[in-house]
Image (tube, rainbow, N blue to C red):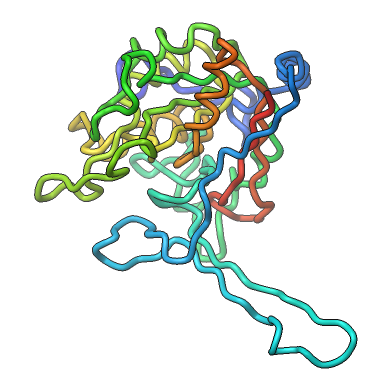
Length: 302
């Protein structure tokens, strides 16, 4: 079945009718063993950005907030007795342009259909999604490869709005194997402005990300999951056919889960110092039945 993007064929039915994991089916025990074989020092790195109250979800100018942390008890609220406690509550968007999160396959539909050809109207309702929710994705332990695209081009970060394509990934991640996670660094968090204002009508501003043609590389190599330090799609979107082509191709047609707004700079430096690109990656999204995504703290083990 051909999708709207030339050269990419949908994975619908590849793992049987009713499949909810997509290409995560490729990240089986053999990939866990392959991941373990990359571990040298045992050093663990968080690939999450800090979750701070007031972090914008999509539009800073609109005052929308992706994350809120609020104290419930603290010293002074319960100072009596022999035991005191501090407790808190967090509230978070499961998506957006700033917080580190993982998309479930049910997050996006195209022309009324979700992954596997399911009618989106029958899946997504006010109580949550009825299939391909975020619990279907957890947990993930697999070998991962970092495509450090700025390093490939001899710069600290890519210009805002750069769309990383097939050739960039082929050059930066030649060692990607079936069932691996592909992480793509654009250097967003090393740039003076992680998000630049765009032209009038550019809804999300200017952000580096993937060109839809990059998904040809993802499919050819059978990557299990794709993560970036940005929103996945490059903005402005470099094609006219679809407003979120990378999300559509990955989540709807290929069944590839996406992880966004990762902190990849420290990982890039550590891997470069050891002259390697492969490492162990763990992903454990929150177990939210019916959830379309989850804040997440990915962990790399070197």
